[in-house]
Amino acid sequence: MKIRLIARVTLSASALCSPAHGYTLHEWGTFTSVSGSDGQLLAGLEREEERLPHFVEALDGMRNIGPAGYGPKGYYLQRPLRNVTIKMETPVIYFYSEEPFQAKVEVGFKGGSISQWFPTRSGGESAPEIKKGQPALPVRITPAAEEKRFRHRGGIDFAEHRSGKIEWEVEVLGPDASRGLTFKNGETMNWLRPRNPKANIVKVGEQYEDYLFYRGVGNFDLPVTFRIDDAETLHLENTGEEKVPFLLVHEITPERTARFYLIKEGLGKREIKTIAEADFTVGGLKWERPVYEAMTEGLLENGLTPEEAHGMVQTWWHSYFTQPGLRIFWIVPAGKTEEILPLTVTPAPEKSVRILVGRSEVLRPRFEKSLTESYQNKADPKKKQVWIQNQYSRYGKAYEQRVLQLMREQ
Image 1 (cartoon, rainbow, N blue to C red):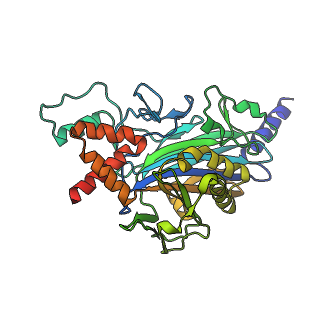
Image 2 (tube, rainbow, N blue to C red; image 1 turned 60 degrees about the horizontal axis):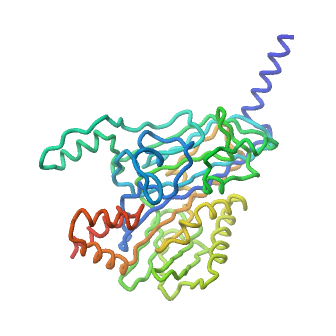
Image 3 (cartoon, one colour; image 1 turned 90 degrees about the vertical axis):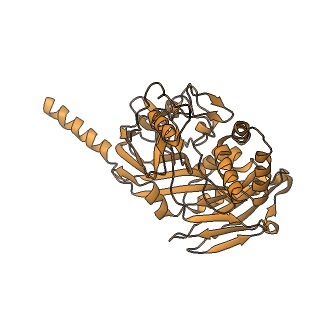
């Protein structure tokens, strides 16, 4: 009897390790960058935009909930960061399998740090220690003294190349598992929207979810540049070695007019495209439907399922499409995605689809001029910084960097 029982348990564990009929893995994710009209990426994107639920885990000092203070769009970080030009937001990984199995998932982040995640990771990067207290500062604060304070507080400078990573040991449940397992107190709307009833539930310990989730911050070069000349004409240039498969330019003007320009055919290797203001389609009062359909259709044509495409657009709709400014949404070429976020899963999927969407905010020259004038009109230097960072929330630090650049050029 004991021999038979042992044999049966061994067979069950083996079956869990690798599904007999293989499985499919899908991932979608987004990141944000901000550039001046000259196309240069701006730093200061470490501020959160959407508050995460309390159960999401993070590197020490990099949570967006905690005693560091609450701002208009989420909590601010306790750990000082520098030269963050990329905010990686909401990559989620789904499994599709007819059978339960166990998997090991490893994600790297070249040029960045994976700062937040769910469920509990089994391994990954660490962050510098945050020491207690503050080092004494001299009466005259020197760059050396500031640097000492920055390091004392566990500061990370992303101009110094960083290579983040995360690992999960997960149990992928069978398709008949109860969807009620994923319920957790404190879920936010943007946590619920990526939920996918057709994906397998993943389990780590006693944590359940429809997906693996991670976020990060970093600094790396993009394979495309976006700039706007003095005539307010947008120039898009593919500087990489692969085609950019899809782009959608969307703008909410200061007058709250919505307009957009679809590049369904993508942007070829080394291709340059110019878009004058007159080329935009003005959305009118019912602009939401054509923009929603254009974005979801682009995602569907590049491999996402309907549930994934709708979940992605709905998760970021308010932030992406209702806020003032000019932004380009573009699907990152597959090779660049693998370069930035190398993914290894054991056992390997039979098929995988990874869609990473860049959200590239670009400042128009007339906005830069207005912003610079308003900044210069603030007499108190301290009030200048407080004003621009409060007025423009997560982009305040990036906007201030651009203003200071323009003032030096005057």
